[in-house]
Length: 298
Picture 1 (cartoon, rainbow, N blue to C red):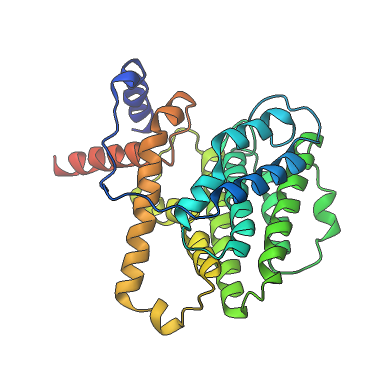
Picture 2 (picture 1 turned 60 degrees about the vertical axis):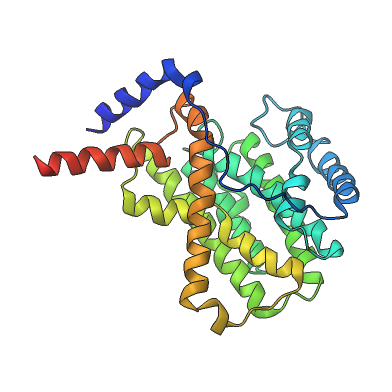
């Protein structure tokens, strides 16, 4: 069945140009942080320092070298930060902007088959070292010595060092302990979800996720939950557990998470189909679900 699904989806390649996306269901004007221009300048200086001074990259996918830095500057993720956090305290927006750039980088690295999207060993090293940083542990030396190629070692070091930078800056603001704990928990779940998807992608290259696993792991891998904690950090809020556990609040957060990664899946479907990387995309997941339900009714 999985091969048949792939055949049908691949046949859509000829009609990719005819696929259009509807307008977002929101007509209200966007708010943007008042310090956007200044924050953009500071973020760009950080990107140039962090990513332009390393070895020349073999391609835009590699997170060291000039071409990757140019791509980050072109995409202007500071704008994303300033739209997502329009009321954030100015001083706290700098580590938040760094977090947004970091999310973009690690998500591409863990999702791209040409990087670590199917490289379980390298991904394991990366994820373990990032968790060490978040939990304040000294990095275990053996993790540095595992059999990872030189290019991947450079990539891992950049991502880990960048994580340490924004995390230490957040903690320097007096990040309250229960908020730190929520960030560590949500970020660990985010990384573990990517780990599951990498294992699935490498072990079953033509197996689309079932709906249950899609809703759980894709939701965690979307990055929304750590961003939710970052919103509280940016506003210097400390929501109590009584608020966070309220059924309405939980339903609102869950619905927002679904909306974020469903829109992302629809918008990126063309690209992922061309790259033969659609195992974790909503469109083929829904298609497989429909095929299974149709077969069950016969």
